[in-house]
Image (cartoon, rainbow, N blue to C red; front, side, top):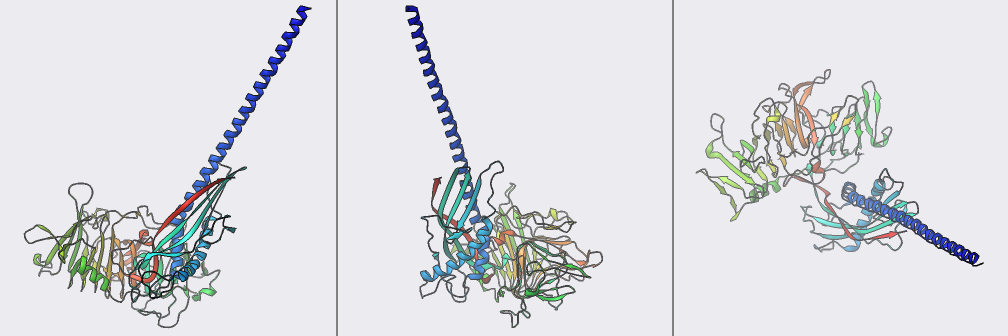
Length: 618
């Protein structure tokens, strides 16, 4: 009996122990499952947070990049170019425009910008390939973005003036800063987990007069000075903005990597269209076609006839009805700049030579400038009429004195920090860089413009370029190329942080590439003639000399000829061919110092200010 009782107690204890152990095991299992579940929750939350933050960062990059380009086109169409303020009414107050009208005008900008931003972000938000999450980005300049209203409890302020000065009479140089409030919403979701980031801030943009340097090609009359028509052909490759106050003519498949605009003036003058406008273009064998009648559409016209298919490719859009843009009628700004802070010559410069020097290292430390104003009977510069200057990055302008010592140049009692302008009242008969070490090889031409140098060469009359003019730090390494299959490989411009820049500008004369220039000349500069042409001297008489490799742009009254070609073989018959590369830095606002500007406004810089950010888990 006692034994049975002991066995029963042992059985009860064993059962109780099993129950306790089973309970502990269940608790441990439940806790493990809970930890696994929480670990999964944490991972999903972290992943969605990272994706939302990535989308928000992408939105910031879009605001600083692509949105800026969209804003430039909107500003050119909406800014008031004649009143003291680009946006807002003038009430006699030169400190700021009237606030209510400023908000109204900027609301119109925001409405147009919203459409452009929606096209950029609503359906193209990238996500990593290794996630099943969905990511959405919306940027609000108005109360609706991507078809969705602002998040609950979020409000947009009004656009407003930030800082700057009113324009003077005639729309003289100025800077004005305006702000557009924005809301950026980034959502990331994976399964039931969602992270939401909302940022609010201001998109501020600075306005100034647009520089003519922004054009890859600009003509007032799109014809030679003798009236001969100019045709864009399948040899035509321009990868920057192209404009004419006249209208274009197309033969076969020319290619444009920047926006193309024409005012359509039938008889463009110095200051206006001089009467009738005819928006459209001429196509070879077809004749003139108005934009409204272009087939299949104004932005992609195409005509096929016995001469081939005439279908220009506009990769960045075309506008057949843009505003007439007046070329400058004087060079007073460049003259004054040279007198006050540059190098001024009240006569003709016979020889202007640029070179760079070093103190023994691999980097050039100085740029030397030789200005010769009188030749001797043998055609050499007189030492008594030759001035030699030099300057370093951030340093004062120095001049070589008669004893062979370098002396700091003083202007109005102060040491002169060179502003980069060299001006001649007459002509400049030669602009040169250092001589090639191997005459037939352009790669052996040393740089003429040091990596820190910013220079504008201006003259009242003709300017002749005699040799290579190369940057020490070039922004581009190759021109656009037409491939055998007819496609185009754009230029390689992957050094857009380069600072060296050169402008060459004649007000009443021409800019000539000298008939004595070397084979395959390389020129890094923006070339401009306000009343003439940029042209090869005696282009139809000199023997074939390869190509002009230009990195920059050309602005001219008439279209200048570079050479003639054998229509059957496609090779040069006389003069030079064209191998042009647009300097993409100019589109972003860089320009040679005191280079002429248009009467149109442009966005010179943008900045994004964030007021704060909130995050939310759903």
